[in-house]
Image (cartoon, rainbow, N blue to C red; front, side):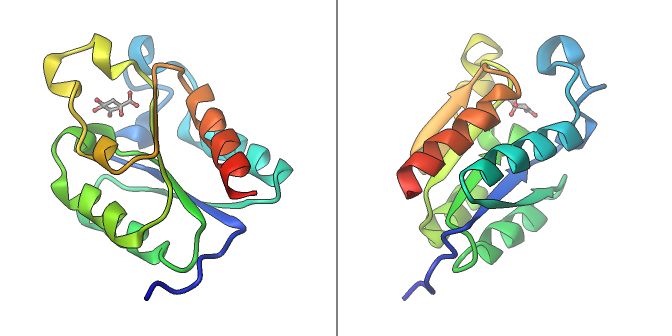
Length: 150
Ligand code: DQA
């Protein structure tokens, strides 16, 4: 049986290369840094009474460990898996295992780009997928989860 989830905490996960936001292909991903996104998500979540645990890693296993640690400790997961969206059955399985609501966020509209970005293993597990809204997508994720969890 799953431990009782902490209703007050959201896990925010950002995958590979997202540590470079702000300087990485700004024409695609914009000028906002990951630190700014994490601080915005934290501020928006606080308005609804949620804490945020923010994790970024370039390593698949570290992302999986962070997702496992949310079990019993977080109420939901907001995840931008980066390129692992399109390749990682293991991250999708980790999300399935923790049995928490998942919102998948992509800064860019992955459906308007290369063909290989159109499929995401994580979307099979996500309650909601937000793509193409830029950093605001993370804020929409918080708003959805705050309404769903209240
Ligand atoms: C991304 C889209 C992915 O295809 C890409 O590999 C990323 C970022 C996005 O936020 O738009 O790293 O997840």
